[in-house]
Length: 421
Image (cartoon, rainbow, N blue to C red; front, side, top):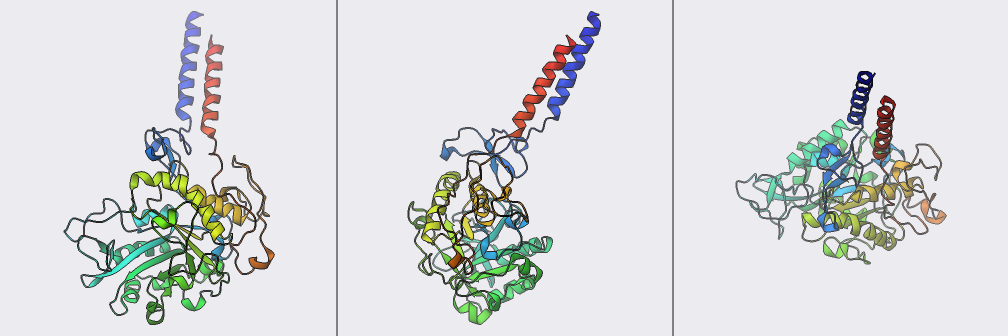
């Protein structure tokens, strides 16, 4: 009898151990971790000492594409993630044979940025070495110690992404120092991107809605390109940026709490001359270790400030340094909330349901407030205009189902052991 009880005890212990091994041990946002294997899909294991976090935790690095849930609305109804100086990547080897002396703004390749949900790229283009290069430079000139790579290399990454993802739309903002005749036209042609080009003739003026994302994909107009050089619109057919969108000040003025001034080239943010808004949120001098705090604490507050400055219009583009850095959800949670509130009246785009009426939200662990009321007089002109007050700060972090499952298995194991006795 004692031998039988001992056998049952050992068997129960083996079963309990097997069940524990089968538990999905993937942590959610904010859970402690020691490596990426401890975190679920779309998360990585990182730290944020600047926010007071002393232990590594699971942090988001993957966006939810709003068009995958709420389809067919005008392009200017959505909010998209943009990387500032997308090409200025930490650890990028020198292509000139000279050690680079400049600031860095991102940590992963442009291909990876796009795969993680980035849909806007800020690229500084210069004449250099008889070609067009991406440089993070000064005084309008590229040097061998500020150069990164020929621009065509990055544009080929964009082409590959658009080819592999036939419904996705990418926007490129060019800080333009290219003076060679037809330099940009030749560049985009060589990169085989003209087949995706959104023509100026179809860009809305005077603040009208853009075409729907469905129509843009159907026509293969999936690459929007804007230049900072006004002369390129007439000479090369490239849209002058501030004729089609409004933009706040970049650098330190763009992160000053309580203030959201427009960039000097742009009309005021509350103007109705354009239906796209670009919000810059990055300091003049990028600091990797501080970015997690900036993207977690300061960003939601500045989105709120700029939303009010723009006459209750959401930012269609949010541009950041080190976009993956945060103390949890970062820009991904902020944009989920923007898209959720404005597209379906839910606290997150993840709670929206395709084809459901506004305010019909899935349970994602956070309360939903219902659909914000749109102003009848202006919604037909600017679909991103909303009346009333909206809090863009993300709700409390989601709860983990892993701990619930683990508690269940531990309890079951104890029952099996007791039964053995």
